[in-house]
Length: 161
Image 1 (cartoon, rainbow, N blue to C red):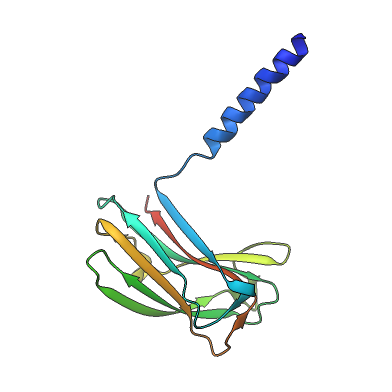
Image 2 (image 1 turned 180 degrees about the vertical axis):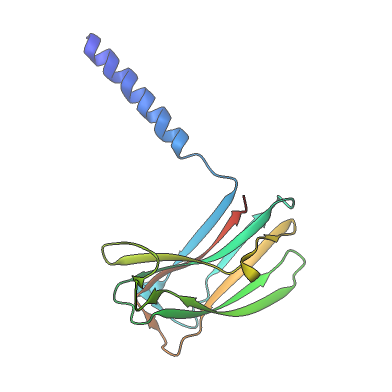
């Protein structure tokens, strides 16, 4: 009986630690959208909305790409459209470097899946954001359509430290 009681306490403590480890970070937002059939068509334009409340902090903005080892290019051209809370939009074509001849894939990988976060903040400096909802739209603008072996595309906002 005594051993069963100590096991219950141990499980309770372990559950508490795991729940605490899964707490939500308020200094980070990331959302990824699955690409249907891992073939990114130019017609498929993932939209991600982010509600910004902290206008005192500055943010780094990243495009997140997850692809397989079978992806046949070293880069990925993406058009990123950002709509701010006032409704103003700006579009930016981005050449995201995913690999080099020296290092191979630049992102983190496991088996044949690689993920890369590419900072798109202008000048690599964190930027202030207005309070309200931002809408990010991503479109692949490579010559190949659909673009095979791209699994996910997304946006990440990090508060600068």
